[in-house]
Amino acid sequence: MKSYDFIENSLQYLVKCFPQMKASYEFDDFSNSHFIEVLPSTEFRENLEYSKYETNLIIDFISKFPNEDIVFVTKNDLIAVENPSLVKKGVLFDKRPLFWNSNIWFNDSMLEFNLKFKTFPDNNIKSIDMVSTGFVSFKSGSIIAPLKEEPVDLTIKNNDFALAA
Amino acid sequence: MKMSDWKLKSEKNIKGAELLIKNSLCSSSVHCSYYSNVQLMLHILFADFGKTEKEIESEAKQGSVDEQGYHNWLKNTITRELTKRDFMIVRDFNNFFGQLKALRIKGDYKNSLISESKAIDAVSFSRNINEILQEKFSI
Image 1 (cartoon, chains in turn red, brown):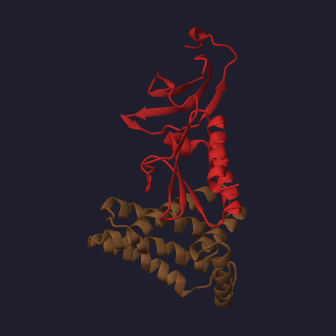
Image 2: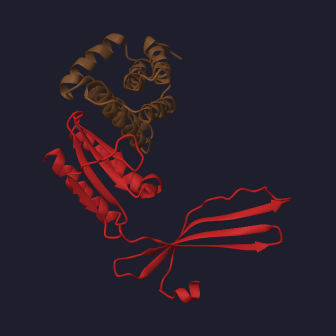
Image 3: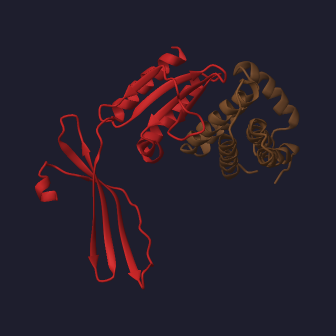
């Protein structure tokens, strides 16, 4: 199998496993490197499952094609993919996630929620990700406890969002 | 901790890159940023892997044939060891170094200049790579 075929198959599988992502491929013959730009950059940087997939792919590629380089980049990186010869887009890539946030105040403290609603190709909302929650206490106008981000998956079993809201 | 001239040269190259940028020699600076990493990797073979200079030379010769290039052999040798020590860091190492390598080739051979912002980013990438290496290897 040639390196290009390996990459094409891997990117096809990538967007199947991660339908919210897009991968654009370009070969740089000056450095003999295969560049793959992956978007959105937040998923590229923060999605742990994606990171594992990419790491395995890199290790597999190096063992099969030790004389070539495979390099994954994202937006605002050192190298940009400007003229991709191959683009693979997941079915959810163009669907903007719906965000909702709210603050609850009591006494001098605030509880903050940031939720991201995941949609699927049939346009039904199937799950909610709690992107971050925060608990901030104010005393004399200054923050004494910082917001903490702890992603939590809140998968729901039905689509009754009137109740959820 | 074993010292080598590779390590000293690695440290001087990153300082050299910064000096070149300060003096508006941005295209030339990327070369220094990149070689700071290459030299630190050679130092790892010596200080962490415990190889002699002769062994490194001999393995590099064979590796350059097998993996079609000295730099490929060196990067792949370090990557294989990183995979054993910290699987998840392989990704950052590979992607930072791969980008810096491509920018270095552009800076050295292509008929175009490297901007100041790219040169500064290259120093930052090089420092990140060196930090990964320093954290994962006994150097």
